[in-house]
Image 1 (cartoon, rainbow, N blue to C red):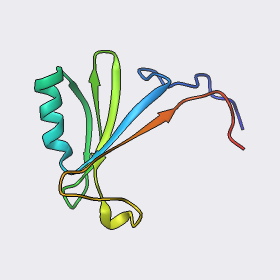
Image 2: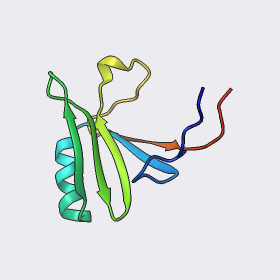
Image 3: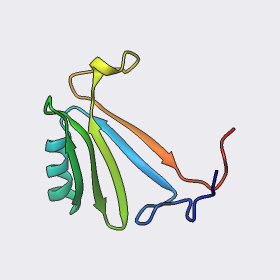
Length: 95
């Protein structure tokens, strides 16, 4: 397998936070007003759920999507749900 030219994609940093929440569309509007975020991309599924979205705050990207409990049997859920993950970019190969 050929080695990627860049371990970290253009426009990203080594760590990219990912938020999973109940109402991503509403959260994006809040991030725009409250943090001056810029919406970069949005993909909505046929069921109206946000499959993937990206915003930029300053020079950092944050990815997010709606919670899809019906597709995730091990996910915890409450009436006000936000979960965070972090993706690490590296030149090291996972074995």
